[in-house]
Image (cartoon, rainbow, N blue to C red; front, side, top):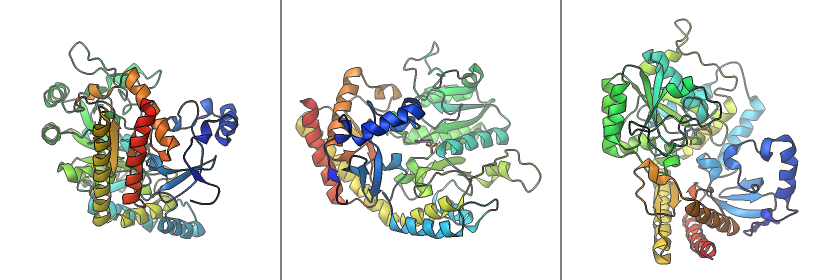
Length: 446
Ligand SMILES: Cc1ncc(COP(=O)(O)O)c(C=O)c1O
């Protein structure tokens, strides 16, 4: 990328590296040196110095192709010139006001034009808040207290949404998933407020929803959950979920915080099912902190302050801050249908390339994903059942060795081998990934 950088080697792991020193400093003032659980990797992570386009450079000067893209948020990679220009222009005009701006209207207009379920939108500062406000809106709209969500699915850190983020792995006496705390000390009242559903199991899901139909405000689902290995909700399952939630007056919430990057209209347009509310985040902020909840004007009316105090009050000092709004608008405008198609073709090429490497190497594995997203699984169990995505200790160790080898070969990817493409990438980056994966597999097998 620039002089002084080199590709590969994992220098950051060596004693006396810049990362080792920074981690020592960090441990004194941040618990475990960490302020974002997802970016920790043992014994300590590399530290970022800078990024440009598809490349990230760590504090030890190592360049890697970035297939993490800040956990899918950076669909245009790093330091996109158009986004930078828009942000710099906004910086000169002021970064935050206790007044609305035209920019929030423009971004809301763009989203409502593209995503089928959206008639109206509200902005938040993170995906966590978007999911939280969707749940609160559903409660305010229905007057009901409980929600249902799927076992093993991640939706951010709101108490109710994080129940059973990590599946207990074992069904309860009734054969259904058990509401399991994710954070220590979660009140029993929170666990009791959440009905945990089995993903892609139509009969089980229908029975549980029917049983709790009069208390349920919402069913929350990520249509293509990363935490379950990017195995999507099956169309018949999602269709049935739509029918029963509609029949029982339950608000159906899609969490598209990640999956919105799958297609011009989000994953809902691919799957052909329209929820009542959609939680968004990541790509819609152009790299800046963001979230949004949107949906039908009828449900979204719970936020409307014009007729007196809204049923769901929603403040937020930095909601729709103009820096995020102009960055998001610029990022989203660059994402034309043709650009989504190009990314999807590249994604398909990467997934097929990795599958071929696995086949040739005789290593059991499979690759899931849609559009620009991919997840490499080093086992061949069917993924449709959420329980099968749980890895054995041996499988975890193998994935860890492949991850380390990829990092050493100039590929930045999540420790779970989940990744995504960005628009600065093309065929050369995809080929570099597939070649590095073939070599990393050899390294990891020893
Ligand atoms: C599916 C999903 N929902 C919600 C969130 C929370 O978003 P944020 O990290 O912006 O709070 C994430 C974050 O990765 C996510 O993947």
